[in-house]
Length: 409
Image (cartoon, rainbow, N blue to C red; front, top):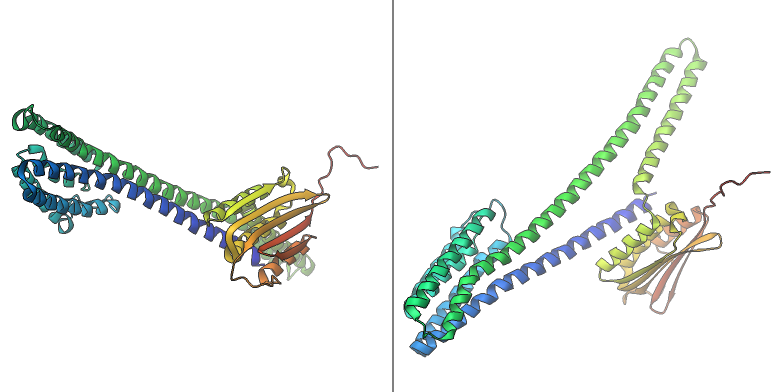
C-alpha cells in the first residue's frame, strides 16, 4: 500500500532537491561573472595610473601609488561581496564593514590626485566605492548619473587645464575609462538585481501554485466528505428513531449508512487517484529530466499511443525504477522505453551499474514490490544484469478499447 506514495515522494523530493541545486549553481555562476566584470576593470585603471606615474615621477613613487591602488582594489571587494546578499531591508551603509573601504578610497584618491595632479584620478576611487553600496533602485540611477556628470566635468578640466593638448595618449585613455567605470559597475549590478528579482518571483510563483493546489484539494475533500458525512448523520439519526418502533426499517437505514461510508471511502480514493494521475509520456519526461539533473545521460523512447497504456499500473513502476537508478545506478547513463507489442505494453529501463554494486541482482524489496504490482495488473517483471548493465522489464496487458459502432449479435 505504501510503495507508490513512498516512491513518488522520493522521486519528487529528489527532483526538487536537484533542481534547486542546479538553480543555485546557475545563480552563483552568474554572480561570479558579474563580480569579475567589476573587479577586472578596476585593475586596468590602477595599472594605467601606475604606468603614467612611473613615466613622470620615477619608480619609487610609482611603486607607492601601485601599492596604494592595490589596497584600494582589495578594499572594494568587501562592499561588492556584501552586495550579493543584500535585501530590501539592508541599510545603505554598514559602517562596521564599509567605513574602512571608504577611508582607504579617500586616502588613495587624495594621494594619487596629488601625485598626478589629475582631478579624475583623485575622485574616482571614492565614487567607485559609493557605487557598490546598497542604493535604492531609483536613487542609484540618479547617483550614477550625477557621478558620471561630475567625472565628465573634471575630465574636461583635466584635459584643457591640467594636461593640455600635448599630453600622452595614455592619459586620455585613463580619463575615458575612469569616466565610464561607475556606469559599467552599476549596469553589472543591475543585471544581478534583475536575476535575483526573477529568482524570487519564480520562488513566489511556485509557493503560490502549491498553496492554490492545497486549497483546491482541501475544497474538494471538504465538499466530498461534507456531503457524505451529512447524509450518514441523517441516516443514523433516522435509524435511531426507527429502532424502537420498526427495527427492520432502522436496520435498513443502518445498511444505507454503511453504504454511504463505502461511497465516501471510494470517493476519497478516486479523488486521490485523480490528483496523482500523470500521463505516462509526462512520467517518462519527468524521469529523464530527473536523471539528467543528476548528471546522468538519459534518453527515452515513447510509443506514440502511450496515452492508451495503463497509467495506474505503469506510472508507479516508472517512478520506482527511476528512484532505483538514482540510488543504486552508476550515474553515467540510463535508457527508458515504453512500447506496445501485440496485446501488451512493455516498459524497459536500463542503466550502468555502480562499481560497488554486488554481482547478484536478486530480489530486493523494491523489485519485489514492483513484481507484485505488475502481477496485480496481470503482467510480469524481469530483472537482469549483463556485464555492467542492469535492466528491468515490466510487461502488462493492454486495456481493451471497445470499438465504436460495433453491434452485438
